[in-house]
Length: 335
Image 1 (tube, rainbow, N blue to C red):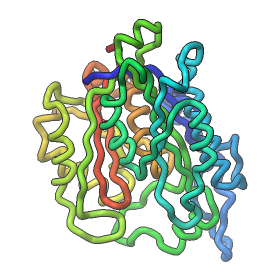
Image 2 (image 1 turned 120 degrees about the vertical axis):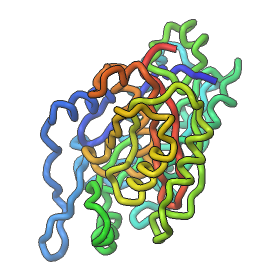
Image 3 (image 1 turned 90 degrees about the vertical axis):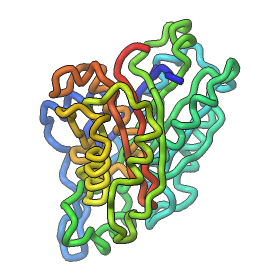
Image 4 (image 1 turned 45 degrees about the horizontal axis):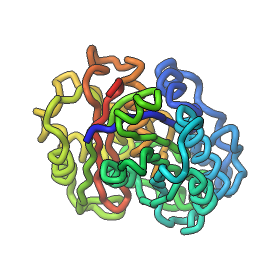
């Protein structure tokens, strides 16, 4: 079931709207201020934070403000008519880790409850598990489904954990710690046109698959779980661009390269692979949805490097710390 994308939101240290990310990053706008965090020995801890939050705000406030800003941007086209009774909200955050407990997102969840009933998902690929459920939620009584994903590594205990347990010497140099949130509003295309909502793109399908290789083991990576997810998507048309964390670490890079090689018939030879987090820093549970929003916006504005990429669907994908792979097919245009 094709759904219309009627609102998008994206907030990171590099911008507060999806369009800012597309054009600021394309233009090479200077990076955010240098990290104020240091080890006890005076070594700088690499991290990017949102200027409007500063570096000292607690994690609960950070998640609230990040999610609220992304939500406000995505819901702006619908503000005049949408009602909480006909809206469902899917929230994606990280599972507990040092510096982030089970109650960290409580304030954000309460804020989202004013928009509609809230369901929760977890992990980088959690947004794709949520997207799989959206077509079944759209009914005559539920006209709008909103996805929000938010995460922040700008917390002293989280940064301390990253310093104490750095990536393997044999791994690639990944993005620095960061924070961000993304939001996406989905509707039935007929209802969207009836309400005169702008249609920014379409959601075609999403899939997830579990894999043995994850962040906390050394299981071999063969791309098979991502292949299993890709095979659940429509096999036509082929795609010219994908958006996901392939420059984050070797696990994610190898998973995507092996899967796309195995599924080469789904891709044009000149396909682009984009990695938003290589510019913004690590976004955690916001990764999957942030890449989806970034991809749709880039296609909508025709800001791709490959000729005609904007006329084809794109793939957004992510891999959660516990090994869940997720992928979605989207377009940047009218339904």
